Image (cartoon, rainbow, N blue to C red; front, side):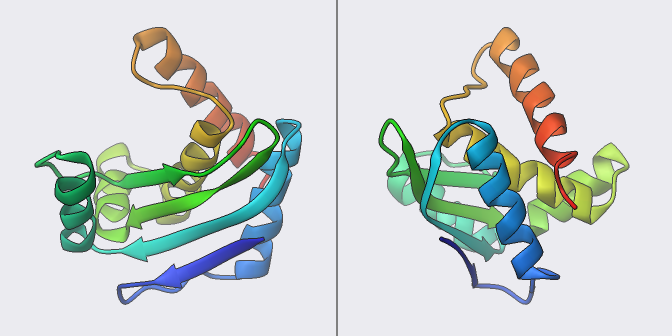
Length: 136
């Protein structure tokens, strides 16, 4: 089950379509969908989580807490809409495209993809593009 929560002045357009898309990403990786919560927030909200739980004193666009097991994907994905908007401007893409990239990114981490090395980051970007293309 995919759930959307809002801690800032933002609402996702067509949540049923996004839920279906996320479920398709999960099944395309041969995983089962458990409970995935997307929490849309602002920079300050996410910054506090970053400091408190990860001991990082920086802004970020996404923080995910993974509760998955080997076959079932589940967790909490916090997304700063402010960062997503800034990234969309910086990379000259639409807000929708950047939001989908970040949403897919969190799920891909749950599926086992990493992004700490250059090689891992390259594969993550390829997977993000592949999963964005599944959006209908």
